[in-house]
Image 1: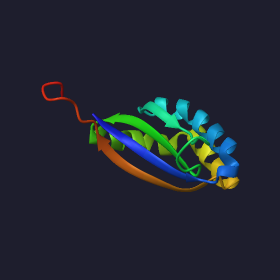
Image 2: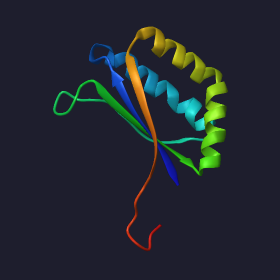
Image 3: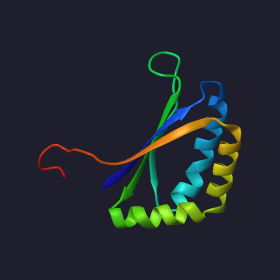
Image 4: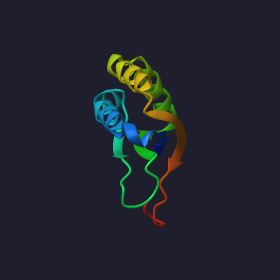
Length: 107
């Protein structure tokens, strides 16, 4: 199982825009074959207030490629992307495909 890891650099003054975007992405991501394991917003307690994160299980690399194509074509995702871009809330997105490490014998 592979997971798409997303690290967003955001404008802390536009956190509500990012939260709206993250909540709106649940439907298109799920309909495109991804399984969201979490979206994480910054807090005032610790860490950078300009970073947010998302993790989405995407299965195999072949399934990830299908997911990417479906998501890119999804009308709600396209609208969400247009809105968040217009808001200026996201400065950059770092993407990585990661793999969970399990105790030996559990993989």
